[in-house]
Image 1 (cartoon, rainbow, N blue to C red):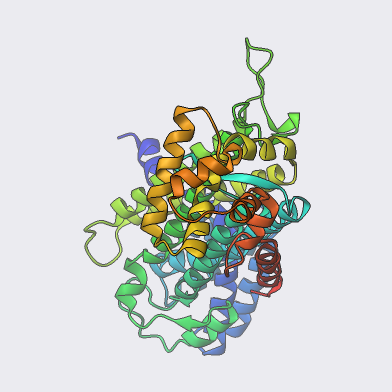
Image 2: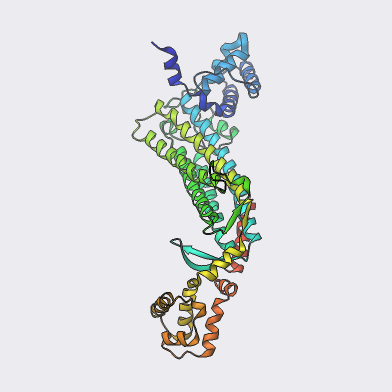
Length: 452
């Protein structure tokens, strides 16, 4: 029998040692509660708590998992009184202990990730403020669509992230539940005080069904689901940056330190950091599918399969935090190419089509469908004759419109091509005008400054 193989197969200490501070804290609070409830001797409990406190800054005697490692280390520190270490097992099980550790870990990581999200949001806002009135072509289907301010475009990323922040805060409510005292699956006959333990460990609520408490991992599934949505947003952001970094667009530039060269092509400045953020999204998605598959059709209550949940959990947290930090660095070092952005407005002047159609509705009584059809005909003429909308003469417009169209009307139409004025006319709530951009920035800053 290969004993070493079997021991290694069961072991989870290589990854669950990250739970050390939570494991020790739960043991301290639990031991104090047992003494206060008269379940164990107060002097013995005091000795155990003292050794547990010392353990916080010491390396553990690593064993099969974090639970046995803490217990083994406690025995070593207690020396001749090592039997007292068994106190920490009273009225509980590894089944409720591991869930408690995981919940405490996730609560802390939600706070950490939300801080990183807000840091990134503020860098996006900073970039928007620096380039607040730079005009650009807005795209749909990667085709030139309508003009807008770069600041409005880039602030869309901030709103994605703020919703991710809200999702995580909402997830926190369902994580913030103490399960300690559920024991293996049925609770315990000891007269324990679960409410006191929950408060001491910073939980706002307790679980009310011991089978449910030890058997479900929906709080981890939900958390990784939130991280998956966040990762999707990060992936979309970097894809936008990758596209706009290409010479074909050239809308933005990055410092050399944030790009990588090629082994054989000296001219290359590859956006490898951005590509890796895009690639690492797949890992978070895989972790979500992994834990869903792990939990699929598991019988009640606890099963050792659940030991694997931490692999998906810890990896997702590490990947997301790393990506947020790198992307914050990227947004701190983006240089916007104003000339290129505004040059493309001239190049793709068909982006004014929608507003010319609006002009016809406002001034000549057409409904929008009629106006739209007239613009389609004008655009077809432009393409066939290699002209643009701005260069068409009064006579050409008059021919296509088929209405009383005066020189005064023509001059009014030409005002549409004043890009800054046009963009500022998109002043509906949530639009791209400078007023609306400034309103967004105020709102985003207020949200980021709120304590959460």
